[in-house]
Image (tube, rainbow, N blue to C red; front, side, top):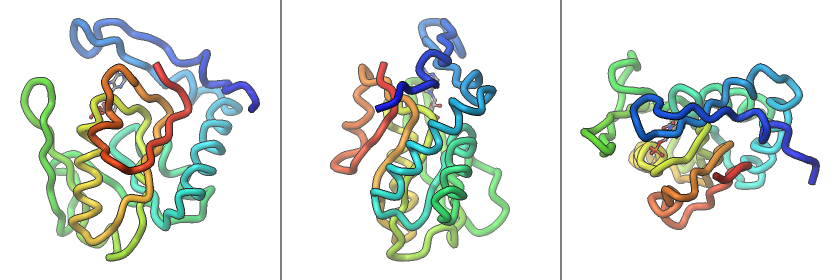
Length: 173
Ligand code: AMP
């Protein structure tokens, strides 16, 4: 396979947002159209191969990757947003963080019963966020066809939180 142009563009930022976290900064990838396009092409292939009929993006960087994938795949795009952002009827899922909890929401009409969703984010860490997105999709009567990430921090074993579902990442650290 051709070299992944994004691989050399991901920037490590130590101690962000707090001491001990090595943050994977993907913004240089977005600033390089050839690298960004390659990432979108490869992630779109995986989304289509999963048989998905809707792309679900997780706020915020999941929107940056999820929307071009949805357009390229000619599939609808549905948003998983942080608490308090969605204006219409919604359902809510809470999940645990290292300290405290976080909450994500979806509009009740974002997924139609029986739809197969491909859940997209920039990076898989512990998998807590993506698992909460899966619960939202399933509560709306949808099914998860798979998960797509640009990066998987494999040492955090996030795939385990996502159970039996297919998980694809372009890069592993
Ligand atoms: P998790 O729920 O632990 O899988 O965390 C995933 C979310 O947190 C994703 O939206 C990531 O963008 C963000 N995230 C977690 N850890 C990192 C990291 N080391 N570098 C960049 N983003 C991260």
